Image 1 (cartoon, one colour):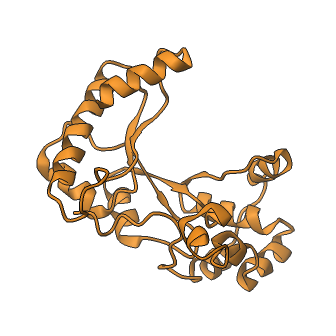
Image 2: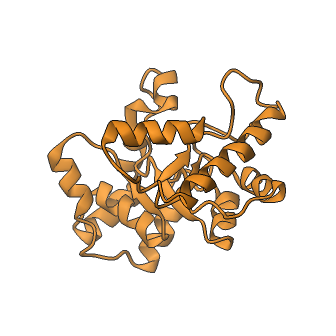
Length: 216
């Protein structure tokens, strides 16, 4: 199915090759999180992605929302190549250290989605009728605002720069041209060690998007 889906996508896009192809979620739909079928499906799907890579239909293959445990299982089950990317939620309020450390140890690029906290579209925001908004919490946090004042950059630029200096690949989302341009303008400054430390100390466990930890 993965190979068929990739070829269908290429046909619809009118392309010969995709830059990056990911397994988006570590679980099958409509199955209990404890089901052993998830592990088998992850392995079978990964083997299909390896074949797509060998056929040069994709330039890179990876996973998304995989924990360190999911990655370790993939290795144990037998693969020819490691994921090149793991796309996970990362921002100063949620830093999944075990998964990040595993990726770094094995040369897997961490691609940080929701680097500004996910905003009003996140699972937590929708579940709380907008009360739990990670982006609002981050952009208005006193520590982030202090660094913003000291660097002359916006709070969003400070947060994205923090992620870049952690060697994360970041994918901020916006539909507003001015915001998109603002997100690009983060390569003309650096955060000091003190700035990095103050932002990193905001927290480790406040997650706003999907949580894969319960998936076997």
